[in-house]
Length: 358
Image 1 (cartoon, rainbow, N blue to C red):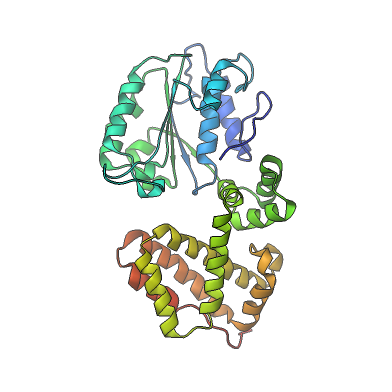
Image 2 (cartoon, rainbow, N blue to C red; image 1 turned 135 degrees about the vertical axis):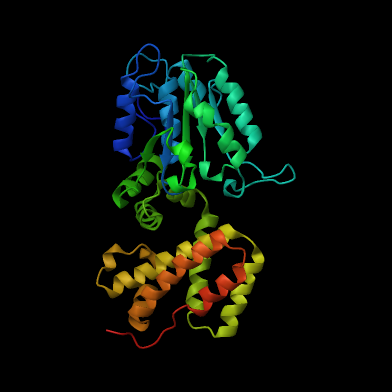
């Protein structure tokens, strides 16, 4: 998530100010050996996908490696310039890769952190820095680490050399081995306020006020998600396709609904399924908000007419129940292999227009 270069002393991050200040205090307390009780040897950044974990971790890495004597990062020293060019010799970035050498991973969520990556990390940690006094290692998506990777890095996390700082990201602490969590300082990021996301989109990526407002509402406080949508029109087309399918299927018969479930199950693209579930959840939440008199809190503000129609013609109890169904189906798709059965349930329970309850 590229962010325009800020002025000296400012981190290239929008929001999460509490986390930035905490990390700055730890960094500013470091002595000549680069390590204090405040500055830990390992940090675990937790939070929803695309909330800004990697962006914050990279900014912290840049500040750790900056050689400026004042506020860091300065964005002008040799270290900062190398970091901005992704060529700093003392920074290593590890992402999930293909589960086997025969696979090609486009979506890192389908890959894993593998044992050979852990071996490379351990070798690099032992080597002294080339540019300054620290080496920084960023490990993304620890929830995707296989058992070999996780077990191999335990000793390094427990007793790293003084020059090494390890930064890890993950969605939830429950998805990371407790032995790894216990060795890290925890930075649990929260979603941003709507106004923060909208401002960031306009200030950092020159989004129009209309686009910024819509994407900020739809993002659920995840700036990375909003930026991805802004830069990829196909993502926004996908949302439109999901909504049009929902509008059509609410009035469709069982056969058409089951045919749609079959097509979705046959596709085998789990990311497309989760995108559909996310879009539909946002939609039915807006319908429920409108029925409760809280229309101003809706996310899909570009579809107010259709939201109002569903709010008038579909029972509130049915909407509430279906939101629960969506949550259960997401869990099934993450933990079971019978996608077809789960998607059949999703489609057959889809609410239909009728007399609205009071």
